[in-house]
Image (cartoon, rainbow, N blue to C red):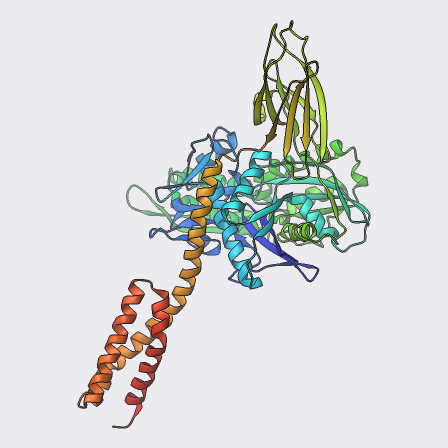
Length: 608
């Protein structure tokens, strides 16, 4: 059976899982951790760092360390969320060539999909090391409220990392799959997913026959732990400004230290009533005096700072239940997913809203990755009886006269599906119409996301409103949208398969894939080379230390002089191979080095 990785590509952390002998299992990274920070950094020497190693150096290399890239993936440069990120991120965000978002690290520009691909590539490497075999297929999760462009950008990231993404699945749905896996239950559940960057709520019906049916879903792709951290940072910055008349936001390193301290304090306050934030030498004043930041943050103050964020989550839950046409008491289980659901204020609000204690039986950081692995195994193993019926998170339709959005497929429609609607021409003698395919929830077309467009030509000339055009929308189980338009009288037709734009062209994705492949070879070789190099250098150092003693003992004989000449030649060849990073040559020298080391040790330890 072909292996399929389940990858929860999170805003803060990434989790990778696989189904092994019928059991979904999290794959630990090379450090033995079950989650990997979704962070990427470029060092001064141009070296790429991913995960824990990137996080550890974030403060000293703030401008070249990317965190929360997921909040920017698939977004347009003009979106308010991007403007928000530009003003608060410690790294540089610029406009890309297609109105998309790009990131600048060490004077090199990267697309957001490329940065996400580096995280996925790291996941692929440690998964292959764990499984001891190559893996190319993956199911990657996304927030349920991601639009088509964000989903496509995530797919591009997978392709750049050398993964065949066989399905993109919604995070709350994945959590439900992991929760219901192997359980013979019939239940209506709500998945409350508040992670590092996004919030989702999904209501599902699970049946004992293996059918998982999503009834309704909603969310906010810019509401999560990052915003809670932001409130603490603002509180610290304002307090410091009042005390010292210095704005810490102007210093990137100080900002990164604040971000680190805010996240730590927030996590600590889930277990204690108050915590001290102590940042010595946070900044120097104009008179070169070092200034320190020291404040006590209480759980009550944190709750007050973040009260409206929690309320936003609850408001979305309220709307979702309305969309699902369900009462709160019809929800039989509430599953908490995402690190932010550890916050007591979040748990209390969820308990109060749903009128029941949430389920404690799933791991909030691992359940989404495990569910993705369950879906992956089901897609390649036909014997698994599991049917997943998901919904469209946003309405789909077209733009009509007066920039109005005419909905054809309402949000929360089960996919696959198709819908048709008849429209008429808006001008006299109009011989062509432009069909603008849009996705969103606003009645105003310009507030929604443009997915694609095409022109239906060759219409017969007639007075305004006399030509009837049928527009048909179709969505398959992968979420791919096809749209066709037809003149009902002449049968003249035109269609388009809407492939959402991630802001990258096919050529760009291909070039990035090739570049990533080169890096993969380099990463593997480097790991191997570093190991051999360290061993060789240890031998070289020890042999050099023994040289004076050995020469004093054996240099008087021809045989001794020849042996010393050979030893020098071996050391020279090894040093040269290390300098040129020739792993194979260093490996070849290992036996000669070991032999010389043994011989020298024998001479030195012999009584003279």
